[in-house]
Length: 329
Image (cartoon, rainbow, N blue to C red; front, side, top):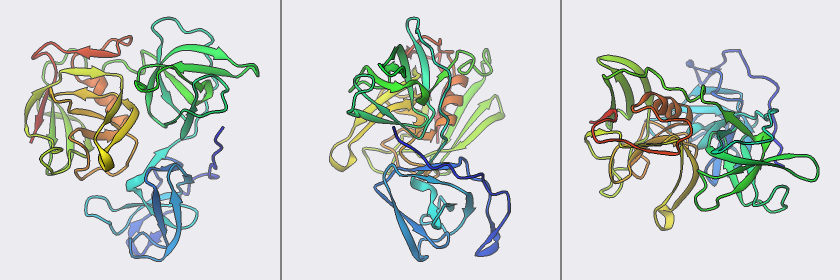
């Protein structure tokens, strides 16, 4: 199994960096996973500072604090302080290492929804197999359909939805947190005045009930090319899913993303609001057309938009006109 370094507590001291305006704050999580092939660690939070080290894909690093520094690109000035210096936040997924003690030794049909609760879970075709079939990342979502104990008494969960290319993989029960019906209960059910505004120029998503703003987050919409731009217009939610294995693209643009959290589709071409774990760079266009949000944002939006999705349902097709309105401006 993968082992992780957990830093001995986060700093609460406010420390100037470069100037008195740049102050360290607590990071969004105690650990970060590198999501690109190589990331630079700098002496100070600026892309021109002295290089201290490189961090590689899937490396797990401590995050001691967050600071607003000099942005490599205008939309994201946030850097994380780690052991050797400062690393830009854009390709560092904030993660937690929360092994689970709960074990469900029997799983009634059709199973339950689970969320990976450690930085990386190693999925295998058989419990205790020496071969790792896939690495599944913190915050991704799967349906658990069975539970099995290996010869050493370790319990494993069998996964289905969220893994269309490799169904029926197994992960240790300690690596996945069960999401109960209460965890996924609808938010503000019965409201008929819900709507969403996605602003491409501001890279924001706002949920409204009437004129009252009830949720606000930064996003990453489609890249500004003919094939990937998120189209402006007025839409309705047409499909809701608890999870999705998203596959597509070609060559350098090919992607293979299991366990994408809580996609809410609003166009017939497959554009959705969904969770994101392959980058942490919100505030500028960078998707293939979908609306990238943080996993926790995707979960909230999924619970809030109409119609209510039953807990046991994997994919819900929405009657025309019955879904929450989505305005892309």
